[in-house]
Length: 380
Image 1 (cartoon, rainbow, N blue to C red):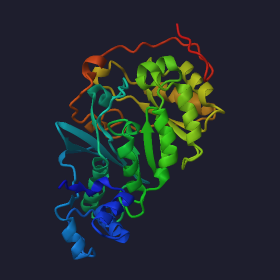
Image 2 (cartoon, one colour; image 1 turned 180 degrees about the vertical axis):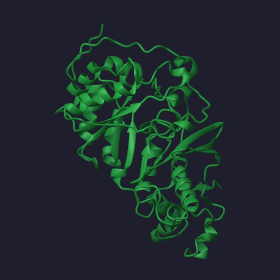
Image 3 (cartoon, rainbow, N blue to C red; image 1 turned 90 degrees about the horizontal axis):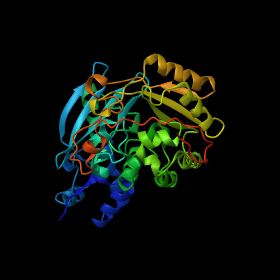
Image 4 (cartoon, one colour; image 1 turned 90 degrees about the vertical axis):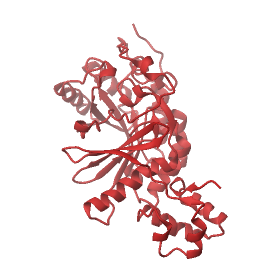
């Protein structure tokens, strides 16, 4: 008989599993709480579970954590873990403590098939989707190991961002149960406002997430026009900016926050000019409630790209802010341990030949005539 990993189940799934064992739903709730709230990995620890249920679980179920290959602690308190997911693949998670919150950045895939030019995960290619249990194992380990380390019994992690390795919406079937486990009051009890899915723009899945499990949404925009975004975020060729923004507007009808966060990686001489900033204003002002999070690029050799100067980032932010658009510049955390945004790489047994496809290919910076949203493309 196949042994079920109980980290794979949201509460409804665990209730269905327990029902097959002849157990009522309240037993599933007890079991769920032991796993996620108390971090139990051994059924014998679960003292208020009936001995008969504990006996049934032995041999048919397990709480299967991911082996930790390495841990790196930054000077700023950021912690990066590398988890073994088998088959020569490993994924990374990052814990980012701040005064008013503690955020965990979680991976959803071993590698990523989107292939954004400025992201080291994309340059490693793609091997496979993670299971729900492998996604949840990251918060399960981080939450309960940090409690032991810090000598605390209360919840440590207040925010989760699906911004690690992978495009979460290309692993939708495993993502949604994982989100439900994190939101469940019997699980990690996160607020929908404090659980963020970041996407490069998988439009049909944005539309599905709005119905199935609306949480905060961050969109990797990185360019103000299609010609440039096609170069930086290849998925744009399938779902161009006009379609993406329309999906974002629809999403806001169900979203827990009343704005979309647009992430924008600042690349020297590529997307960081005053003209690009003005094009962004034309794109969103009065059309979609949003805020911009400007991200200093974290260089790596294979990208062939450079980080914008700090003064350029600030000037770009000022143009947006002066137009009434809420704009923040992301503080780089954990860059001394390669844990900053865009640096997560893990180990990926690539099945997509990404290394050869993307090796230092120059970004063609188009000279664009800005078009109204939904208009036709013009580039010279």
